[in-house]
Length: 200
Ligand SMILES: *[C@@H]1O[C@H](CO)[C@@H](O)[C@H](O)[C@H]1NC(C)=O
Ligand SMILES: *[C@@H]1O[C@H](CO)[C@@H](O)[C@H](O)[C@H]1NC(C)=O
Ligand SMILES: *[C@@H]1O[C@H](CO)[C@@H](O)[C@H](O)[C@H]1NC(C)=O
Image (cartoon, rainbow, N blue to C red; front, side, top):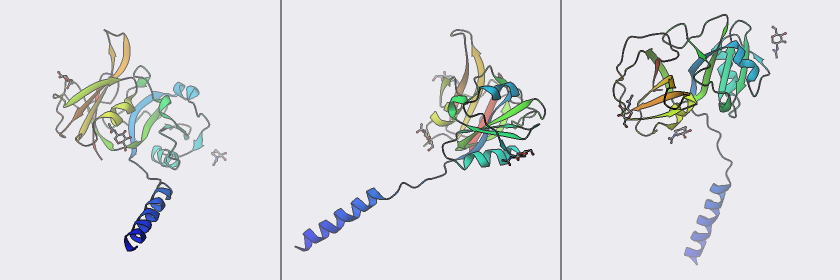
């Protein structure tokens, strides 16, 4: 009798556990993925701007809704667009940043951030870089930040490039089990350059 009672209590508590509303967790934080020219804005899936005076304010406003994956911030007009992974820039759409930290030009460029990153930008460097633990290519830079093995990856290098063999613009994603990526000199981030990310 007692064991039946205990079993029923166990059953009821596990049903309750299942019925608890799913916690809405905020995963990761905003990080640079590209600078693009302002002309990219007209193609965005969600292209109604909200106001923001800095890119930080833009990405934090966009992060209020978990559905958003990306923020686009146009500095000269203070326009902020919150949108989805499908709007990620292809490697032929990106333009050079003004420094090795991924800050974009004030006047004609828009900064693009991925809102849920487990990694933060460290620097941008000239290839070649040290040998990675694993690597792959993608047409979406966010895939590089999402698809490196979470349990072992300490740093990631992403390089926008053109592949002669497949005649495709793509991103080369390299995952490292350490945070000692070495390569050439620091440069403004952009096409052909490695952007280095480290665990946040
Ligand atoms: C955004 O800024 C413009 C210009 O400053 C202003 O007219 C508008 O009311 C603002 N919109 C919101 C939603 O705050
Ligand atoms: C990518 O991986 C291949 C084999 O898995 C390796 O030969 C190559 O050096 C790696 N590339 C980089 C940039 O780490
Ligand atoms: C790593 O974690 C992120 C955030 O939880 C998740 O979106 C992504 O799918 C994970 N990646 C892998 C390869 O498991």
